[in-house]
Image (cartoon, rainbow, N blue to C red):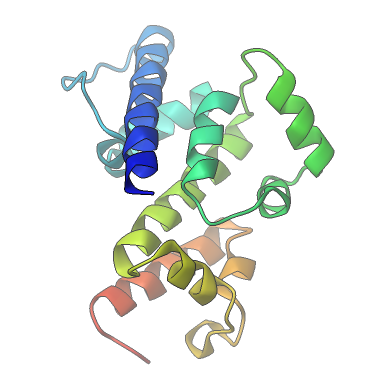
Length: 167
């Protein structure tokens, strides 16, 4: 299992570099570190803005999808499309998501990155996402991930858990 994560880590880092190249060519945004990693990418807000505007490729989305606890139905719901549309996009060569969908993909990547840091296993994180939370109005955190305000509430709650603040 660890070898698979390492392999997907290399693949996602490579995909980030491909995206950065596209952003540099199309948007003129220059990045000093050409060997940027996925984790570094998620921390660079200006680069994320440019990446959203440029659009996320299906290949990059697929790598993100592999390291998140969300299934295909979850992703279709988050992106506001049917699972059939998501599957159709998969077979289109060089498919690029629209900016609104690209933003949602990167928001969920950010939540997943933080969730995997806070919880010991992906299974624990997914369980937390699907358990009603008193701090979140007795809603399941996964329900709140459908919009940006809800995502911010989930991020704030994950940060509190990480700091040992349980309210």
